[in-house]
Image 1 (cartoon, rainbow, N blue to C red):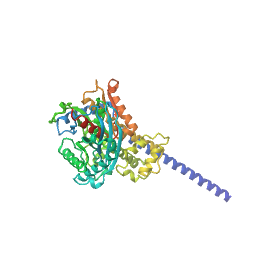
Image 2: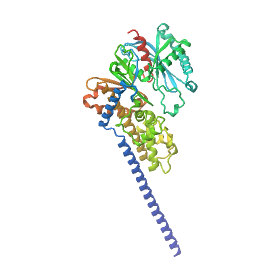
Image 3: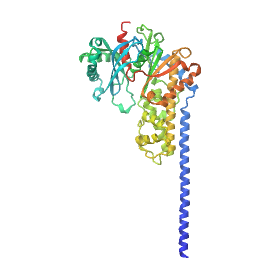
Image 4: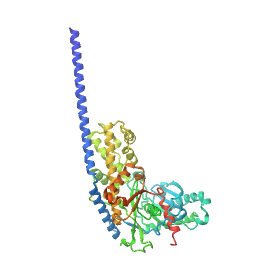
Length: 491
């Protein structure tokens, strides 16, 4: 009898434990589903705040075109609209071997290429990248930096001197373009030289040009720099070499900017001599653009408030590679804090600003595996999130999609705004080239950008705007500037 009682008691205990476990699992499942619904609510609100319907894109395009007009008339405009008086522009007939320098934030690129005229592609292209020691970028003097460039350029030229020919190289000009360091990038902090407002006609540009040429002469290099130019100016020069229908060139990487061709008579603030062609390149500084029609969210507001330049370069903070991953990180951090998306504890590294780079964001966004295995790998690698559910990983990919789609469509609206300002939407073909890793390597971003332009212009006019990848790759614009100034100097 006692044995039966013990067995019965044990059975009751086991049954109670089973019931308790079932209740616990049910409660745990309900809690997980509730948190998942909350995470999805955050995602839906974020997506709604980021929405860019065609009507809004048209408003942004109209606003940009209006601010371009203002910037061409006044120095006090939101957009810098800097005059880059590089003339003559390429004709497509340039021939010969040319050298260029592209100065970046922490390195410079030496480039050599051959042009065959008749709009033939650049050939025999040689590149060499040189890291810049921190000592050469600190302080106010550029002497050490330009001496370094001259020494390395002399070595670079000597490798090709036998095939270049001495007589041909003596009167050749050196193209020199500058890629402005991104101020917000913690990885390049400490860089003293930030020539954001550089224009080839301003005092700073002329002084730097003189310093470079003194360094070239000192080290026996038979080349000279005619002017410094923003790399978007160089990219546009390369685009014009291939086609006169190229009207603008966009840099779309860590930072962003635009160079476009403007009629000299449309630039009231310019009081210098107009080029013979009647056209000049304008460096827009479009990262400064802002509009009440842009899609700002709470995450953009916090990013801006915590940046080194609150209230400025708002367009850049929505579209450039420097910031896209950071916006994604901020959304995921809120989800982790409020919905336990990655477990009960918020992963510490998820709170680290700028830890998520745009290439990693692109990899997660473009993950096509069944359980989002790439997302899982990136979460482990970057944020040390060692466990995540397939549903959580899907939400991560969707956040990336929202951020990328908004950024790409805003770029598309910007392109339409430029073409509208030039009066070319209805009856002229316009080619726009884009240079930078964000466009070149982020396939879904690129597709969103193209589709936004098609949607805005509609079937009647979308064929009039052609968007292409930049010719020759990063820095190659310096070659085309050198060619146009050397080959066409007498024209």
